[in-house]
Image (cartoon, rainbow, N blue to C red; front, side, top):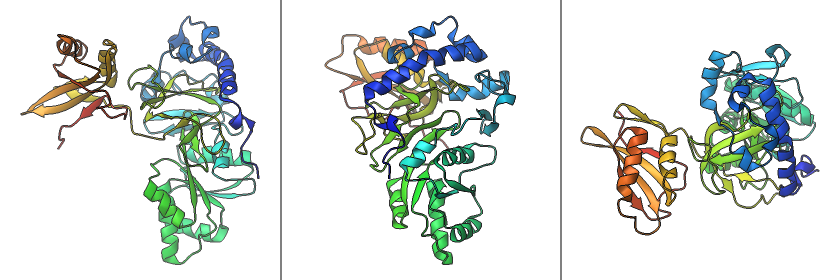
Length: 412
């Protein structure tokens, strides 16, 4: 049995980067030429100079949180698609609402790679419990399964007892859907005394796969792998048999940036996930997912040579309201950027009596220069229009979790 989906997964990291960045100028040029939104965003930019990560980091960030507004202004896709709606294959709607196109191309969302890594092979029957209504998750699995040569039972979520009956009758090899719902199905099957032992593998997403949940599913004889994908981008990263992080997909460029900014962070630092796709129909460039993660050191023990993400570590949007004014992570990042000697920083928002109060804690090596706290506090006030107390702490004192704002107020 083949160990890898294709040779792309084991090529050298240098060859992978060269291939991705060779393709990037054409993708940027395509977006600027055929997408009205990117024509505005990129302006007179020369796509030929976007040939490495440093150049890519100079491009503007497009945030997922901005899509709904863009699409209201220029329906249905906010001017981001490169072809008319009628030439797409399908249109989906995610909460927001946000509309996503799907072109008429095999495995449009590239899920086949993740399914393969989870052990699915041609001839398997997949019990697909991802939703088919409005959102594309069910179709995402369908397209990947078709590329692998698998058959799919389109179960969708809900109707637990009917699904348990279908599993007993059809005896699928594997499951796709939310991990919690899989455990519900297996436990209900045990209660009813109906067979579910045909299920031996699963590819899950949509909610955290905790260690306890993985072990509970393993106790039912199911080997579970997870993937990280979105309706806009398709597959971003996927788990392998090594269970040592999520290997990044071969058709995307992933950056980890300081939340609220486009500033790349070094590997190991927790930040917001930005993705650039090579999708010609919906060419999202430096697309901020709003998710937090970090890049793991080294490579997977499974033999795949791409970088790995730690997985989903929370949401990057930590915007909060202080004394009637919104404070954004990007503002705190800008304060820190003004003072190169500072390391990590975190704004804590609490209360003194009945009034909101802010404390900005900054990592600093050695004693602070005279007046530094006052200067930092002044910049904080200029940027946020709010007063805050500045404190300096030793390097490594603040957690590496990507948070720039920590709201510790009690909210009733």
